Image 1: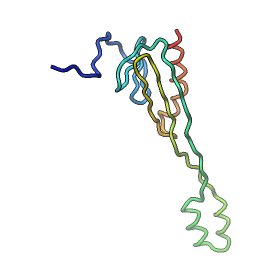
Image 2 (image 1 turned 180 degrees about the vertical axis):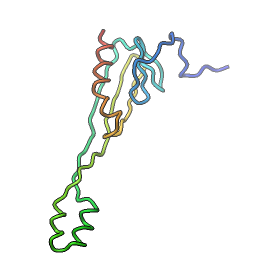
Image 3 (image 1 turned 45 degrees about the vertical axis):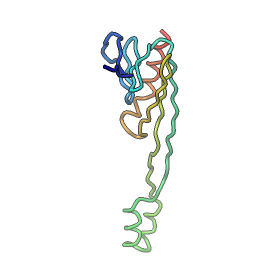
Image 4 (image 1 turned 90 degrees about the vertical axis):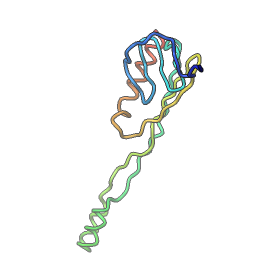
Length: 123
């Protein structure tokens, strides 16, 4: 009988929070690559978000339909958010990273979650 490389013998604790597929308990960091102690873990965050501005389709249609006064609609701009936020954790036995899509609800919570994880790792 072989033992899974992802099997853990650490005590089971409830998750305090989850960042992507990284679970954080009071004492442990749980990832698909394994489990490691939270104390002393290092947390990195990189913002790979890009903001672009473009003329929306509705403005182009109205500019054509209402020509020549409709050309004013071409001044309308639409902001788009693309990219992701990378979160990487390094602990004694593991290093694992996740990408959170920019503009998602999870992305808005990433910075406070990583700050809390760093606080727990230091304490």
